[in-house]
Image (cartoon, rainbow, N blue to C red; front, side, top):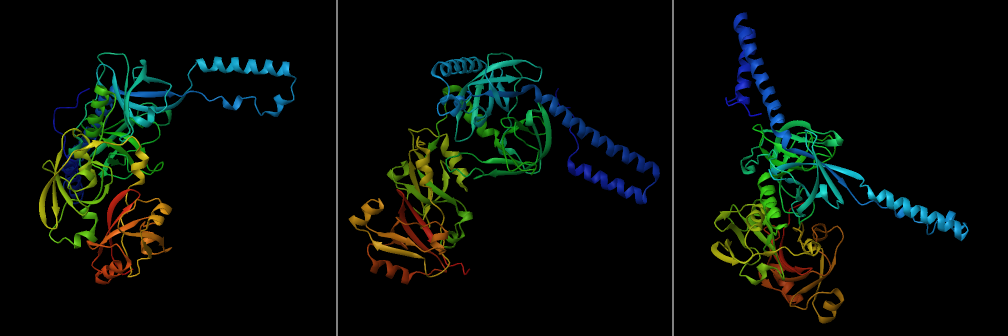
Length: 497
């Protein structure tokens, strides 16, 4: 059912009218009061009707997804069961044969043990949902609000964004309209439709609480930010739509932070659309990767103080030794301000610009290096298949709160390199990190190799001590090092704590 073509009063207008009604109660005549009160009720009715129309408009394109997983009958195994050990061999064989036959019969019928939601994005049967909804599925069944049921198959999943597309054999299906999620604003209405706790086609509403939420999932390989909402989202809502007052999908409901907390998260529709299109076309989505670790300059005051006049961008904190950027002119401490001419101010900004780039064409990075602007070309590569290896190389931000860094270092020798499993290079090996020290609290660890202090090479203890003597911990000390195959830098600073 289409929304009414007439524009509805804004929330501010409603508030102003309510204030006028209150004023008339005190000062105005009864007739005027009754008129304004009636007008305010009409506004409330129009808003009420708007929510009804949104639910009626969206629900036909929402599906309930039931998932069956292969049953595990390992508990029925007779081996090691003392009851069967005491049975005569012939009787035991009869029991075993009967159990096998029963298991075989039971395995013929799928056991639907999980449920989620999804939305139709193409009229010929393509449905968008979450990857975790269909993960490990042996059989998938979808049901529409009108009761129609279809078997579905997974077209493709993308673990990094938790987006999946499933396909049913159907035509002329009602299609959800995906909004431009970049235009979503904090405070606007947000309406969730799904099947929480097996309660099909439940509708809840609230507001967009925040946008651009990142690191909600503590996994650096995940590649998305989230829309946060206080619309009530519960288990079973996963994969269902979060829509605006116009009935357009602004996000795919994905996770919650505790039941009944009013904190839910949805994948922005722009990312969901981008990934879904590739999954439909190719069965997979290949994420571009530069092999760098970055941090928003705005969130790095220690480094920002060392670069007065520089307000925005992302700082190159680490370069993976065998990553794409390792073969470029990009350097530690470079501040990337744009990618192919598009400004980037956060880590998610840069990931968003890079992930869909072609892997055979270099991107142009506008970089500020020691107050000079330079352009650097880097050709993205596909994310490594071994995501865990990438995750383990993620650097942690470090700082220092006293002249005693809490580090014990030794010149790196071949014996030490072999003992600690590090590559032989010029530098000082961290052999101990004092418990409770600034270095220990911020993630420095045994086996790190320090190569520079304040841009001065340190190959022996004399150079190291001299560099620290010249350093000003209150202003900040830049330390280059390698850690678990990653070249990175840290800023150690005395915060006065």
